[in-house]
Length: 458
Image (spheres, rainbow, N blue to C red):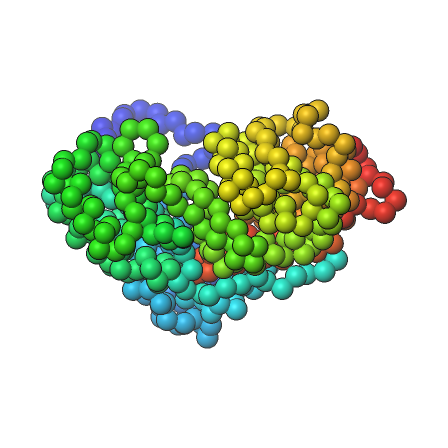
């Protein structure tokens, strides 16, 4: 207890500091509307509450996850008055697991939420609306995720191994026996994984587990100490039973236990197979990925005599299908190992009209040799922080058509504003439902150069 001071007590110039609401406190709230991330918004005693699992118009009891300033983050514990839109959650872990936070919303309402988020960002940040809205690209609501990272942690007090997914609003681990969004081939592995890991002799040395489903199934184990022969035998037997590859990640890069094994995924429409290794970026939703590529090529309308630029090319997810339609594809990526992987994928698919280069795409485009005489069309698929420095110079490349694939509407809107300054018009935009049951928004936008070639700045 603090010791009481006698005499004068000085108060900060900003007035007395408001007491923060303690974590765990429960509060009855009236939810007024939904935030862009799908959380319910309530206002109570001068604070704004963001409540996981709540819908507009509902009366709920919320448990505080954290508070800072006048913002309180909470999750729904009880629903007193339910919205007509509310549906039963498909997952038994809903509300505790940190994933799939909007599965209590019908899928059509999830799509509408994501559409509103994209439209709001484009309007508020860029002051623009596309000339045409594209219908959402969708796939199955469940059973779509072909890759997952499973959290693993040794609980010193309880002397047991925790296996599952991170809890909502904390670093706690929620034990998961099944996950409805995983593709079916990974479900049996997921359900039996905790029991198998608890048989290992050094559970304290385990990091995380990753599951993969593509041309092969695979289980990757991160470990911080060498595995015993007995533990290795348990892991091998488990993977053999599930007909999955076993990969280990100790020191250095992940490696398959059986030399020469590889992972990959097919793009059926183009007869392509792309190899990858654990740690490489791949889209987790195979179905939406393939329809996304098809839509990007349809919007870009590449011709056989054209030279096309693919920025942030990764493994060649767009570059290789593009190469089937155009004279030449120049693909650029920031990570050298990914450049090498993409080039190898082109060769293994007998594509010889592709060139791959490494460049730091967070910096302005310079007079790199790969720019050459420019490009008639550009496709870019940047990370969450967008491609601001790149888009500032795209007009100088001479591209008449540009397709921008985004995983963050905020940076897409920011970059849209810059592209408009460069003389482009936003012709079309729409959402990609890559992650059903979550509020995560992916989008695609088509830009075309103004016919008069005018721009505010270059």
